[in-house]
Image (cartoon, rainbow, N blue to C red):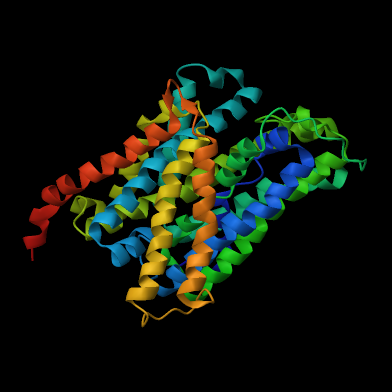
Length: 421
């Protein structure tokens, strides 16, 4: 099997986390240029970097297919391992249903028919199934494809940075709250652990993962900050920013730039769906090996098809960018990963750790503190946010509680497999 090297894994991680500066527009609108830049400098330090360090240590120490699910299961047992998988896969439904919708909305600006039935349902389904088919070629094909897509994605933004006229950044004219901008930034900096699920398909994972985390955090931060600074110095007021504003912003710099930027939105969506499909599909594969999912899912093509079908059926959810739901479900799984990091430090000090967070167990606790406190703060400050008529926090809690109920049924349904030779 051809394995992922450093550059392909960095490219795939970039798409799992970011996929370009799309989605960050609301941060500028909510917080202004200076507030947005400040948040984009702080969030990598207190949110992305600690998560990257945790992933670097655990992926190097336990380079197993299934990644974060395996870490939590090893540290806390099969029950909590199942909850980790449940939370991650539940979050994937909201994530993976939204991205193809962005593809269709972007395509609709060039071809309005795409916004109407049957195309507005058929095209997102084809995006998902096309990315599933791409993943059938293996992790190496996904990683190499991410390099090409990344270059295509960044080219128009490089032109925006070069061509943007340089004026003084206009004063902020914000219409939101700083913590609403914080949610946008957290959402755009989450997903570093997704690269861990393909560890057995990575060359020399003990060295590759820590390096991948460093370069990926740096790349994502730069891709967000540099284009925002360029547009800011061109004199565009922050009130002009809104979701999807990159096309009009590019057109304001040079009219012909609007179409390349519009096309790269679709490139970004394909890159994100392709890379996340690779990551999420390995979770049911690892669960099947542990008899917590049907054995047939241990075959990659079966796991890929199952995930693709579920995401396609959930496309009706794709009209909402439910950032808080994503953060709450993903955040709960991330807290379990940090708990696993600390528990393994205490219970398995002899575990070989090619890369180790300095400071011993106290250092690991301090690294975990900032992201966990930030998650609690985000949940408290945004506790009144709603998905339809229901609060986002109660809805996320309900989804999480379903995992507690599902675990005994999963063990019972798959128990017969345990007696097989």
